[in-house]
Image (cartoon, rainbow, N blue to C red):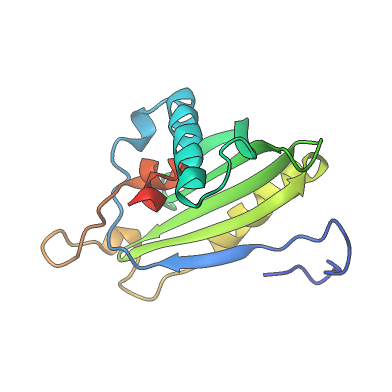
Length: 168
Protein backbone atom coordinates (compact mmCIF):
# COMPACT_ATOMS: atom_id res chain seq x y z
CA UNK A 1 0.00 0.00 0.00
CA UNK A 2 1.27 3.44 -0.89
CA UNK A 3 -0.10 6.75 0.35
CA UNK A 4 -1.28 8.98 -2.49
CA UNK A 5 1.22 11.73 -1.62
CA UNK A 6 4.28 9.45 -1.67
CA UNK A 7 6.48 9.78 -4.74
CA UNK A 8 8.06 6.36 -5.29
CA UNK A 9 10.94 7.99 -7.18
CA UNK A 10 12.09 9.82 -4.03
CA UNK A 11 15.00 8.43 -2.01
CA UNK A 12 12.88 8.41 1.14
CA UNK A 13 9.76 6.84 -0.42
CA UNK A 14 7.96 4.34 1.78
CA UNK A 15 5.13 1.86 1.44
CA UNK A 16 3.35 -0.67 3.63
CA UNK A 17 3.99 -4.25 2.61
CA UNK A 18 1.09 -6.57 3.45
CA UNK A 19 1.54 -10.34 3.66
CA UNK A 20 -1.04 -13.00 4.47
CA UNK A 21 0.20 -16.10 6.30
CA UNK A 22 -2.43 -18.89 6.31
CA UNK A 23 -0.69 -20.93 9.01
CA UNK A 24 -3.70 -21.64 11.17
CA UNK A 25 -4.78 -20.16 14.47
CA UNK A 26 -1.87 -18.36 16.17
CA UNK A 27 -2.18 -18.41 19.95
CA UNK A 28 -1.41 -15.14 21.72
CA UNK A 29 -0.01 -17.54 24.31
CA UNK A 30 2.44 -16.20 26.82
CA UNK A 31 3.24 -13.12 24.72
CA UNK A 32 1.95 -10.68 27.31
CA UNK A 33 3.99 -12.31 30.08
CA UNK A 34 7.30 -11.94 28.24
CA UNK A 35 9.38 -8.85 28.82
CA UNK A 36 10.43 -6.64 25.93
CA UNK A 37 14.06 -7.33 26.86
CA UNK A 38 13.47 -11.06 26.48
CA UNK A 39 11.70 -10.61 23.13
CA UNK A 40 14.50 -8.34 21.91
CA UNK A 41 17.22 -10.82 22.87
CA UNK A 42 15.38 -13.64 21.09
CA UNK A 43 14.83 -11.38 18.09
CA UNK A 44 18.55 -10.58 17.88
CA UNK A 45 19.46 -14.27 18.10
CA UNK A 46 16.93 -15.22 15.42
CA UNK A 47 18.06 -12.37 13.14
CA UNK A 48 21.64 -13.66 13.37
CA UNK A 49 20.57 -17.27 12.70
CA UNK A 50 18.43 -16.25 9.74
CA UNK A 51 21.34 -14.29 8.23
CA UNK A 52 23.61 -17.32 8.60
CA UNK A 53 21.02 -19.60 6.97
CA UNK A 54 20.76 -17.24 4.02
CA UNK A 55 24.54 -17.21 3.61
CA UNK A 56 24.90 -13.60 4.75
CA UNK A 57 27.33 -12.15 7.26
CA UNK A 58 25.37 -11.90 10.53
CA UNK A 59 27.22 -8.68 11.35
CA UNK A 60 25.90 -6.86 8.27
CA UNK A 61 22.48 -6.28 9.85
CA UNK A 62 21.76 -6.20 13.55
CA UNK A 63 18.78 -5.20 15.64
CA UNK A 64 19.90 -2.48 18.05
CA UNK A 65 16.75 -1.94 20.14
CA UNK A 66 13.02 -1.55 20.15
CA UNK A 67 12.21 2.09 19.52
CA UNK A 68 8.59 1.13 20.20
CA UNK A 69 8.28 -2.00 22.30
CA UNK A 70 5.92 -4.75 21.15
CA UNK A 71 2.42 -3.81 22.27
CA UNK A 72 -0.64 -6.03 22.07
CA UNK A 73 -3.90 -4.25 21.36
CA UNK A 74 -5.90 -7.08 22.87
CA UNK A 75 -9.42 -6.28 21.74
CA UNK A 76 -8.24 -6.07 18.11
CA UNK A 77 -5.69 -8.93 18.34
CA UNK A 78 -3.02 -6.68 16.85
CA UNK A 79 0.59 -6.32 17.98
CA UNK A 80 2.80 -3.44 16.84
CA UNK A 81 6.50 -2.69 17.30
CA UNK A 82 9.40 -0.74 15.79
CA UNK A 83 12.95 -2.05 15.56
CA UNK A 84 16.01 0.14 15.17
CA UNK A 85 18.77 -1.59 13.22
CA UNK A 86 22.32 -0.94 12.11
CA UNK A 87 24.00 -2.13 8.95
CA UNK A 88 27.53 -2.08 7.65
CA UNK A 89 26.23 -0.39 4.47
CA UNK A 90 24.87 2.77 6.11
CA UNK A 91 26.24 4.92 8.90
CA UNK A 92 22.86 6.03 10.18
CA UNK A 93 20.61 3.64 12.00
CA UNK A 94 17.27 2.91 10.36
CA UNK A 95 13.86 1.60 11.43
CA UNK A 96 11.61 -1.31 10.55
CA UNK A 97 7.97 -0.94 11.63
CA UNK A 98 5.63 -3.90 12.05
CA UNK A 99 2.05 -4.79 12.85
CA UNK A 100 0.49 -8.24 13.01
CA UNK A 101 -3.26 -8.85 12.92
CA UNK A 102 -4.33 -12.28 14.04
CA UNK A 103 -7.32 -14.04 12.47
CA UNK A 104 -8.99 -17.40 12.81
CA UNK A 105 -6.82 -19.08 10.18
CA UNK A 106 -3.58 -17.13 10.17
CA UNK A 107 -2.26 -13.61 10.35
CA UNK A 108 -1.61 -10.50 8.32
CA UNK A 109 1.85 -8.95 8.58
CA UNK A 110 2.24 -5.25 7.82
CA UNK A 111 5.73 -3.84 7.48
CA UNK A 112 7.57 -0.72 6.46
CA UNK A 113 11.30 -1.34 6.24
CA UNK A 114 14.45 0.74 6.10
CA UNK A 115 12.89 4.02 7.23
CA UNK A 116 14.74 7.08 8.52
CA UNK A 117 14.40 7.61 12.27
CA UNK A 118 12.76 10.97 11.61
CA UNK A 119 9.72 9.08 10.24
CA UNK A 120 9.22 6.85 13.30
CA UNK A 121 5.77 8.07 14.27
CA UNK A 122 4.45 8.04 10.69
CA UNK A 123 5.87 4.56 10.20
CA UNK A 124 4.25 3.15 13.35
CA UNK A 125 0.91 4.83 12.71
CA UNK A 126 0.79 3.59 9.12
CA UNK A 127 1.23 -0.10 9.99
CA UNK A 128 -1.07 0.18 13.01
CA UNK A 129 -3.79 1.85 10.95
CA UNK A 130 -3.48 -0.70 8.14
CA UNK A 131 -3.88 -3.53 10.64
CA UNK A 132 -6.78 -1.86 12.43
CA UNK A 133 -8.62 -1.23 9.13
CA UNK A 134 -8.35 -4.85 8.01
CA UNK A 135 -11.59 -6.71 8.59
CA UNK A 136 -11.59 -10.49 8.16
CA UNK A 137 -14.51 -12.09 6.33
CA UNK A 138 -17.53 -12.98 8.41
CA UNK A 139 -16.71 -15.90 10.70
CA UNK A 140 -12.95 -15.50 10.20
CA UNK A 141 -12.09 -13.11 13.04
CA UNK A 142 -9.68 -14.21 15.75
CA UNK A 143 -12.54 -14.59 18.23
CA UNK A 144 -14.37 -16.98 15.85
CA UNK A 145 -11.71 -19.64 16.50
CA UNK A 146 -12.92 -23.15 17.30
CA UNK A 147 -10.35 -25.41 18.93
CA UNK A 148 -12.37 -28.39 17.73
CA UNK A 149 -12.50 -27.45 14.02
CA UNK A 150 -9.55 -25.14 13.33
CA UNK A 151 -5.94 -25.98 12.56
CA UNK A 152 -3.46 -24.50 15.04
CA UNK A 153 -0.19 -22.89 13.93
CA UNK A 154 3.07 -24.52 15.04
CA UNK A 155 4.19 -21.30 16.76
CA UNK A 156 2.71 -18.53 18.88
CA UNK A 157 2.60 -14.75 18.67
CA UNK A 158 5.96 -14.28 20.40
CA UNK A 159 7.58 -16.38 17.65
CA UNK A 160 6.26 -13.96 15.01
CA UNK A 161 7.55 -10.91 16.87
CA UNK A 162 11.00 -12.45 17.43
CA UNK A 163 11.27 -14.01 13.97
CA UNK A 164 11.45 -17.57 15.35
CA UNK A 165 8.65 -18.58 12.97
CA UNK A 166 10.98 -17.84 10.03
CA UNK A 167 13.47 -20.44 11.25
CA UNK A 168 11.01 -23.35 11.04
